Image 1 (cartoon, helix red, strand yellow):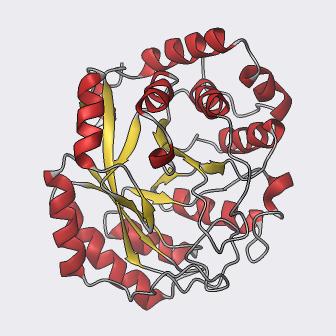
Image 2 (cartoon, one colour):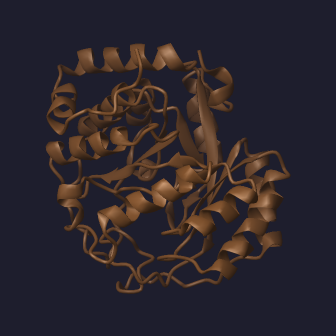
Length: 320
């Protein structure tokens, strides 16, 4: 059966609301039809330019509008990026992701990042960057450098979006995704849960992601990491089982996408992370930091995956 791109929020909300064990069974069957359930992809995320962003994303400590105690740092050199990439590969990562806190980079900055992409790719790692909004020509420049994935999250549904950010429109995000796709770069696009949104809003996000044709090759699901000084600090914590339900629904409506359990894992115990992987997540970030927020660290992740009889390998090599 071909993948659907016409899911409605109401349909997805019905999926999420299924009896819990029925939902997980459906997600696991869907997952096993596409992937080896014992394989998880390991990626590493590096902030190559930190802080000073002019956007007003309510969750983000890198916004220049909020006082979070974050030190602004310049764009890293290619040699610095390459040293971090070598460490990531030694830790078991097969994809290396680079993030820069820009609203939209200029062409000179894109050229600098392109040099880093070429150097990282030469190590045999998959490459991914997130740089903000891109023009068509900038997307083509990154494609020429050999970029595998471009990350540009939708964050939430269109209906809730204005509660989270006002300095960039929803259509701005969709335009960048269209440029990236047209340039031949794979799309990494997901969102953040736990920002005070309803279940219907989460279903709306998944419906919008599934409407992309083709589906994003990579779908990160981030649990809000609350940082003091940002507007969302103090938001009520999302119920753990609601996170699992969201991941299961993501797997069901986008069966061939790699679903990454991303930010917020330091707030999850091992049992919750295991449930998320059982629900269809098959990628995690390694290392002790995600851009500027904490991450469990390599040793803990390797220990957890070993306890789950799961291996860190590229998932695409183990598609069913």
